[in-house]
Every structure is written in C-alpha cells, then in structure tokens.
Length: 130
Image 1 (spheres, one colour):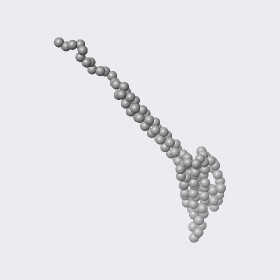
Image 2 (cartoon, rainbow, N blue to C red):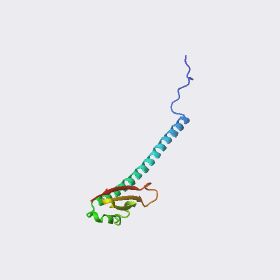
Image 3 (cartoon, one colour):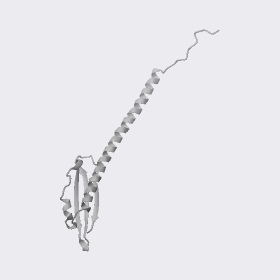
Image 4 (tube, one colour):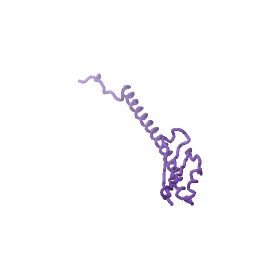
C-alpha cells in the first residue's frame, strides 16, 4: 500500500532563477539602449556630413554656372547663406595663367560653427578653363 506522504514535484521557479532571469533581461535591455544611442549619434554625424557636402557641391555648381569666366575670381568674395545650418563656407579662387594656359581652380571648404560637430572640414575642388 502506498502512503499519502510521498513528496510531490514542485511547480514554479525559485527566487534565484527569477533573479537570474531579471539580470539577463536587464543586460539585454541595457545593450539595446546603448546600441540605439550609438546609432543615433552616427546618424546625426552622417546628416551633418551630408549637409556640408551638399553646401560645397552647391558652391561648385555656382562656379560652373558663373556667367563670365573673366570675373570668376569674384566668387570667393560673395557669401551665399553665410552660416547655412550652422556651416561656414570658405571659397578660394586661384587663377593660373602661366605658360599661356588660363586655368582657374576653385576650392570650397565647409566647416561647422560649433567645435567638434564636423570632425574634418569638407573640401571640394574643381578646375575650370574657358
């Protein structure tokens, strides 16, 4: 005959198992939060870099569409959108007429108003001839 005192199997989790599950879950949530922050910074930096490249390309486009080649050197003195979106544009125009060639090199450098926002200046250059 069997007696009614046989041990019954336990059901549920122990406190240690629940605590370990919470620690693991906390670690996963923390890792996801940190990766989201890193991704946000990366997207922000990429956006600023893209805007700086766009501003430089627009200035190069202005140089290519300049109406009179002889007055192209005036492009460096003209400021379009002085601080567009917190970016500063510096344009240099160098005319090389040595040895009978008439070549103008335009260099556009875009930096940020705030220090550290744009790690390195974005620079675009183009050489134009009449």
